[in-house]
Figure 1 (tube, rainbow, N blue to C red):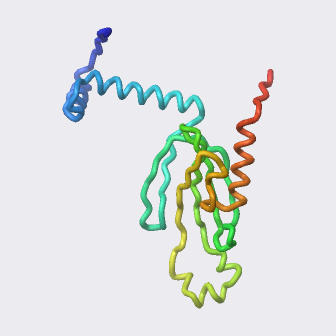
Figure 2 (spheres, helix red, strand yellow; figure 1 turned 180 degrees about the vertical axis):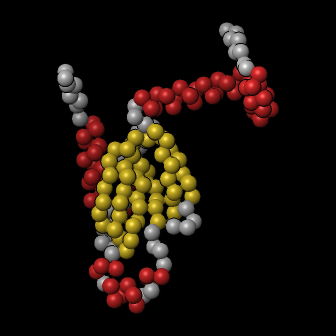
Length: 169
């Protein structure tokens, strides 16, 4: 196994010592792991991928989720039962899966049945929430996403699978 010498400045020495203490293993394995992660992030950036941070769950009690992906498209529409107004950001993940950030923006009853909206007290509660739905292929989303959104993802999948035209411009 080849030996590599790393010169560390005095100001960075405490960080190296803390890393060795936290890892509980040889510093070389910590450095190798950090370099692998650095190279992977650099390759992802070359492919247009970036870290996506999303707040998932009902408003006020969301949890942060992160993943690496490239934005493939956006969509707006209604749920299949036409009860919710939705917005979606569609991503292609590092592993080739489809990830959909589905944002439930509001109930349509405020427009379609305003009297019921008031009498039911729907105006007293913030119904908005966001969910993350992941599938390997558009047809695997099942009922987790609206049919129109699934069709949009199929269109995006077909476009990304098609041949690339290299232009000499």
